[in-house]
Length: 165
Image 1: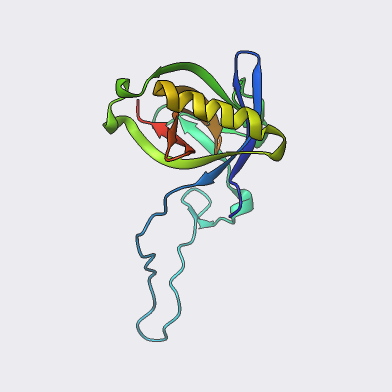
Image 2: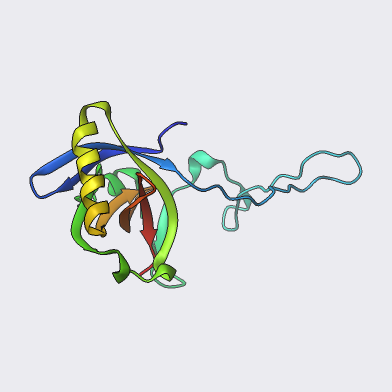
């Protein structure tokens, strides 16, 4: 399985090289639409109502709507320059008792693993969290968003679950 994110877990003066893997899979069947007469797949063109033409993916930018008449268009470099400390790291904010998190707060689930050089430190963290029943509350930037997450031991492995808040 290929990792979906690489970085480090940081808390205090400790830094452990880490990888993230998808732990769950969306089991929905991806149905598509097909033309009844010839059997070809229906395409969804991106359309600009002002220019009245189809727009290619290379011509599309992301933006934020301020009001119905006002918006801000952002470049990819704008996202890279965001002051997110957690860009390539999982920043542990605090350790809390595992019973202190409402189960309804858990969202997406990922397996957390370590690089070869961090096996001892990673295993020590896992065992310590298991022995005192703690969960690490952390910040992680993934897919251009900073997520609040919980890192917790589960059956001898480490899980990272994003949190609803």
